[in-house]
Image (tube, rainbow, N blue to C red; front, top):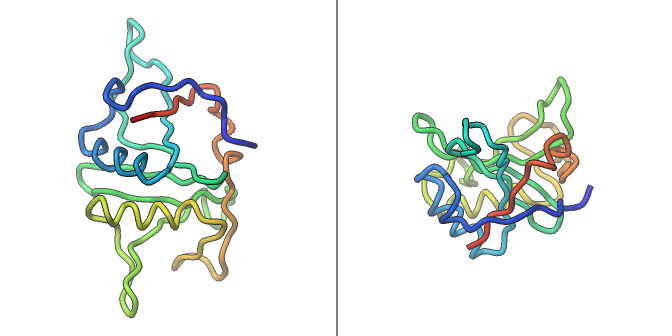
Length: 149
């Protein structure tokens, strides 16, 4: 599946969690396409605040999300399976030490570049797995909206 033909909305006009605004601005400036599921969920047609985004570069897809307790996470999209789930966590590479979750915008960009690569391997896999691309999100393609700067 190719990148969806999605309507767009300006980043400042979408109810994105405040902690995600700066990372999304940086992702857009770095050339990523950034999407959200924008299905109205509130009475009267409003949207709930969103704390995760789908990122895409050259057909490869990943996710960046924020949780107030756990912080930022970046995920590489893989073909779902019982053995591996549907995504691989992407950590900040630290040679000689265990990778860790990104803590700031620069680290999010490093992880996002890895998450939108052709293949990725982390501690949970024995070999690099291919990026599953947009097929991973085909179930909700009609609800995607692209964020623009």
